[in-house]
Length: 98
Image 1 (cartoon, rainbow, N blue to C red):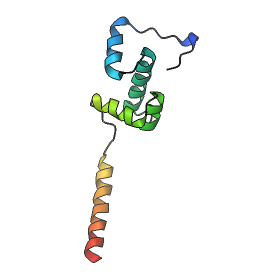
Image 2: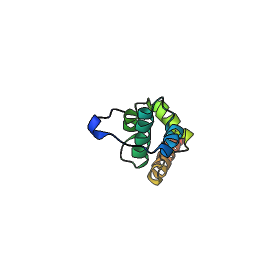
Image 3: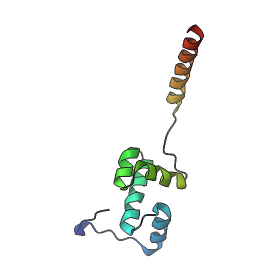
Image 4: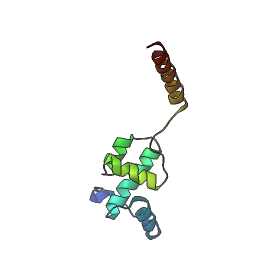
């Protein structure tokens, strides 16, 4: 994570182990960046790919990080269920008639 000198952030000593546990980056800056990316993703402020970019991780590595913390990275909404049900019915009709 790039910080300008006029944007210094003070992190309490007792929070540092939590950042290490959450992000598993190779530096404090990396852990803070990944933590911010996770927070923005969980808050639905950014997409999965944008969060990975913010955390300077590949999408696969970001998904792996989310999985380690039991944070769902994909949603399956009620609308998705209805839409998939319609598609399945249409496919079954095609198979029956084809």
